[in-house]
Image (cartoon, rainbow, N blue to C red; front, side, top):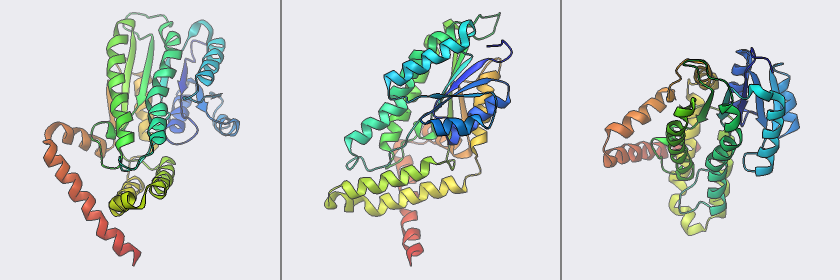
Length: 301
């Protein structure tokens, strides 16, 4: 591995934010180990840039993580890793009363446990780079969400994973600072990516599986919420490239920021969480959700 081509690992690089980040870093001259779940996705991504090296990586599998670590160690040698981008994630949307516990476990396993497991595997490669003066040995970027600041209704499982990921990131940042490894959090707002198709599918599956009496209590509000969230993502002017730009800055800046808020709604959630009393914030969210219900009904006529 050439000193002129420092290496970075990006998890969840097949689509969306991970793909945009991998391509951005590759264009900046990094050798990018792109974590993917299938050979086909890896081949497609590698065709985009000669700097991308696909790596089969399932963040919920200890064996998959171990094998990816072995491959990267063999290929980087004494150069180690310049950076790690923990981007892999899923989103479970459901009323907390209805959410299957296996779905909740899967949410935490991917978004939280997977992040910690991958970080543990690759931290030795981040620490081994020589430090020159004020330079950093390695860098970690955890892609979280604006939902890590404000827990929206019907996003309880996702919010739980993101709140926890924020906490883990804070602890890591303070633990690793003396070892010259930086930790940054990227908090995107609503962005249209393939994750929204998966959210809608999960929402429908949860309602079908729930007892009728329970599902009917939430159905109208829940369906309106899912539609409202998808509309926000489709209408959002924030693109995956904006997240990739934040990741790129965190990987190249002399002093990377601790947090990168991407999109006006991400900034709005931060301000609301800090400034508004809980009951006022609850009322704002409730009013916004209630206003979406008649719009849905009119659209069906």
